[in-house]
Image 1 (cartoon, rainbow, N blue to C red):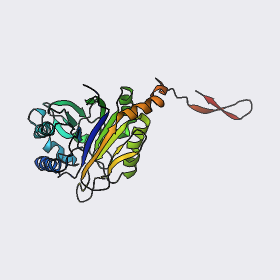
Image 2 (image 1 turned 180 degrees about the vertical axis):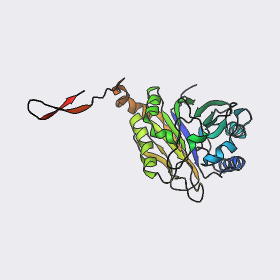
Image 3 (image 1 turned 60 degrees about the vertical axis):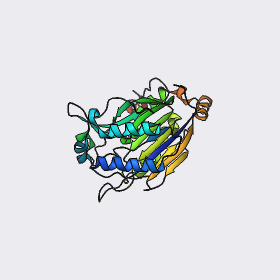
Image 4 (image 1 turned 30 degrees about the vertical axis):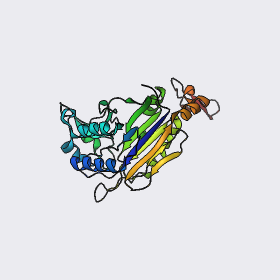
Length: 290
C-alpha cells in the first residue's frame, strides 16, 4: 500500500448508555450519519463504548467474534463510508469463555484486519476490571494507509515500555482509546503528552464523557497531540462530538531525522546501587558502589 503523507482522522467522544449494546450502536450510527466529514480516512471510537464503564456489565454484554453485532455494525460502517475504523473496544468472549477488552480494526472494505486485547487491566481504587477481563499478551501495530499505528487502551498509557517498543518498530501514530475517570485529571493531561514527546509521534487520546452512574463520571477532554507535545485538536470537558484533524507525517519524519532521539536508546540500562559502608580505620563512612 502506498504511504500517505497526510491522514484525516475523526475521533468520536460521547457518553455511552450503560449495559445497552444495541442502543449504543444506534447512537454511534446517528452521530456518524449526522456529523462525519467527507474524505475522512480513519474513524476512532473510545473504550467500551458498547457498554459503558461498568465491570459487572461486561460479562452480560460480551460477544463472540463469529456472531458479534458490534463487529457486523463496524464492518458495515467502514464499508459505507469507505474509511478505516479503529473501533475503541468491546467485550469479546472466546470459545473457552474468557473475556477480553478488545479493539477491532477495519479497513475501507469492512474487513476486520486486526484485534488488540488490552494488556494492562485497571483493578485499583474500587475498580475490578481484572476480576472479569483476561489481559492481552502483546502490542499490535496496524497499517492505516501506510501509516504505522500502535494500539493501546486506557490504563496501557501508564506503561511507557509498550510505547517505546512501538517506536522502535517505526510507529508514527499512537491511539489510546479510553474510558477515563474524572477523578484522575492530572495523568490524563500529562501522560498522552509524555508518550507523544518521548517517542516523537502523534497521539490520539480519546475517552468517553458524561456520567457512568450516580457517583462516577468520565473525564472527557479528548485530544490529538503532535510529536512536539502540542494539542492540535480537542473536545473540551463533557461535550459530545468529533475531533477532526489532518496529520502531516512528512513534517514529523523530517523532525525525527533532525533530532534522532531513537538512536540514543541503549540496548540495556545497568543501574548501580550506592550504599554507605564503614571505614574501620577512621570510623567515617563513605559512598561505595555495588
